[in-house]
Length: 297
Image (cartoon, rainbow, N blue to C red):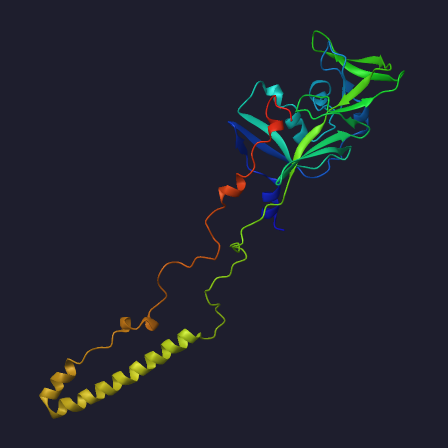
């Protein structure tokens, strides 16, 4: 498969539905650059809350900018609410391949062309579908008496480690990754321009049938012309009347025989060429409802 065809399958054009534009970010290879410390990087981004959150890309933004556990595509998707209220655009991941530390925990067939996929980290259980920026889709029940180090912030927005000892009701939630996989689009039955062949003859040094016919006609006309000229000279010597008739004899016009003309007419069009891709195929996909701000499904 050519790189152009691969890019077309990976990079999808934006969709528009209900006044909201969905931009797609592909994640097609299993991300594996996370470190072992990612499994124990917990924080409470809500100072007054009790939720302990793991695998959060915001940890690498607020707590330690050298810390990275998830690919940038997930960071962009998960933290898009940080840009403020937005009802015009939304980012979705598609096509999606779960990172190496994650696995598929739930799927939902939206229609015949697309399937929604949920990914949770290893050791976490799927609970219910949530949108980006809203943890709670993946959770892990922690045994009583386990000591966890959790980053918490003070009034000055400074982050410091805090020791938390779990009890029987403690659970840790992890950032989920939701995205889409798409059915392979069926192309047009018409051959593509790359696969089409031109009707122009190849130049291999030999004469085509048309060239041979043209030369034959030209030679024949040349012989006739010489014979006419010789007869005219003969008749001129015998009589001025015959000479006059020879002078007004009609000339043979090369433009009267299409076989003696060069190739003309409209340019050749390759079968199936249409000067661009149809927007109908690209517009078949509507913005996923679950990715619209404030909508769960």
